[in-house]
Image (cartoon, rainbow, N blue to C red; front, side):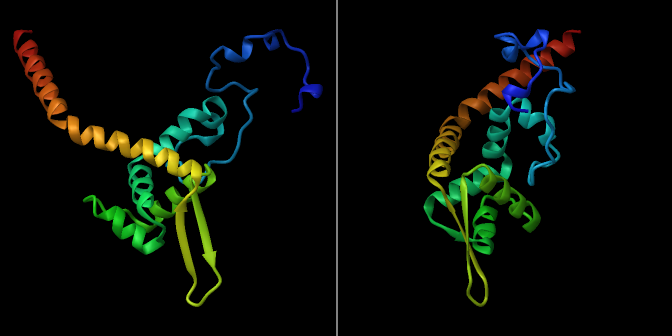
Length: 168
């Protein structure tokens, strides 16, 4: 509701908006689930922490691969599906469509439907999407470079944990 129509409540004082809200706060507006949220409660999550929701979209299993693929060039749906599948995991048509729709809603992906026969739909990155994709690609490259260190840390952790469980 607009600020002019809000009632003054004790918790509306300055700084109250910064306080964490309970997940079932009745003051939080609800919205229908967004496409591609994979079960995430868009109603509460989006209102409580929109940053986290966008981060989940950008860093999701398919979101990462789609954004990185679209850095190279625009793709048609089936081409994009094949490109994303090269990572070793095949994405279903439904999941690709949902993820593209979510990224489009977030302003990261542009969908261009051309009125030709047969119909042609191309997907590309927006300026915002290109910026996000560059960040995601940097993180992906970091994981490739640092994977030996992560594997060493995992082995050390597992060995220490195994020793402590034997001692117990």
